[in-house]
Every structure is written in C-alpha cells, then in structure tokens.
Image 1 (cartoon, rainbow, N blue to C red):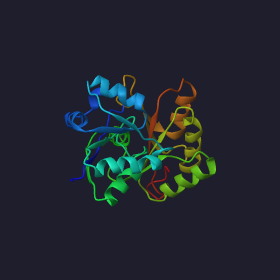
Image 2 (image 1 turned 90 degrees about the vertical axis):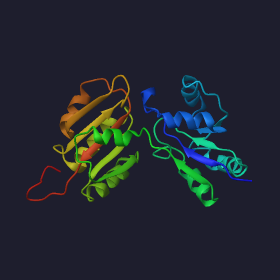
Image 3 (image 1 turned 90 degrees about the horizontal axis):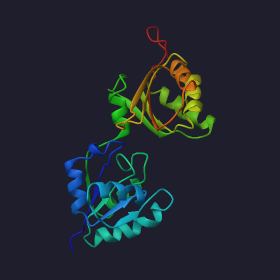
Image 4 (image 1 turned 30 degrees about the horizontal axis):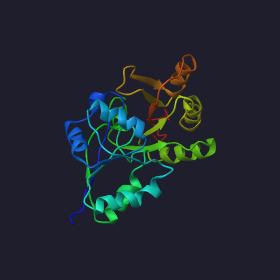
Length: 234
C-alpha cells in the first residue's frame, strides 16, 4: 500500500482572499484536515464550501495525536495540516508532526502562502536582507531580556510576535535592551480591515500606544545594529 501525503497548507492571516488556488484545491482533495481549533477551521472550510473530517491538533494534545495521524498517512490517507491562521509550524503546532512524518518516510508537500512574519517584515521599511525570527518571547522579563540580548548580538533585523495585553511591557523591555532611539515597526492586524503599520523609534512608538486603545495582534520588527563609530542608534 502506498503511503499518503502530508500537505502543509497555509491559511489566511486575516483577509480570506489571501488563500491560494492551490491551497483550496488541496483542501478539497485531501481525506482529512488536521487543525488547531476545529471551530476556526470549520468557518474557513464553510466559506470555501468544503466539507472534510477535522482532527483537533494543538500544543497540549499534539504529541498524543501524532500516532493517530501517522497511522492514517501510512494507510494511504492524504492529510492537510493547517493552523488557525498563517503557515503551520511557525509559532504554531506542526513541527513535531512533520518531523515524525519525515522519520516514517512519508512525503511532505509544503505549500507557500500567508505568513505574518514575512508580511510584516517586507512592509516594515527596515532591512530585509538578514533577519532572525523569535516567535513569541518568554513571558518573564529576565528571560525576555536574555533572548533579546542574544538576538541583538547577531546584528540582524529582529522579528517576533506579541499580543495586545503584553505589548507595552514588551516594548519597555525592548527600550532597555536596545535603547529608546532604536528603529522599530509594529504591524497590527495584518491583512485585516484595520491593518496598520506603526513606524518610528521604540520610545516614540511607546508614546503612541500609551495614548490609545490597544487592539489586535502584533508583528514587531526591530533593526538592532551593534554600536560602532558610524552607527550608535542601538
């Protein structure tokens, strides 16, 4: 019996029109869809007029569910892996499933598509030639500072995600690590109706956010360069 294929299928990060023709075709043709939140994925599939069995797969249950999914693939089932939004396995469940499928000799087909970190980076106006992605930073301030200091030493553009209720605290920590005059861009609600880029210095962006209601998820892009005679802003 031929083994099935595990398709890694990016889904919209906001605007439903972001999904590709190929992604729609794969979702129509596959035998089942592995997803984080079945309710969220059901909304997308209903919009696309697609009906498929859904397998719940999130951080807390992924290790327990992997054997079931691998077994289906070994029985010849073609399965699509999606996340709630964006590209699976990028700050979302999926890495361990892909790794195990590779170990079992199962074919992986990874589709290109929406990804918040790339969308935010290319719209930021900050250097794109060399960057590091940190996902979501550690919650404790000391560990967050350590992460940021390690990233700063690499002399690259730094990208990470943040939630609205933590954004002020995180930016205050960034100001301590990089200095208030360091260049930063915040991408908020990317591809959605109220998409917004907030550009400036860390101190300036902090002042903006402290005087307004904070809603939506953020992609944060910081251009951190080592101190030199020519470059002393970070």
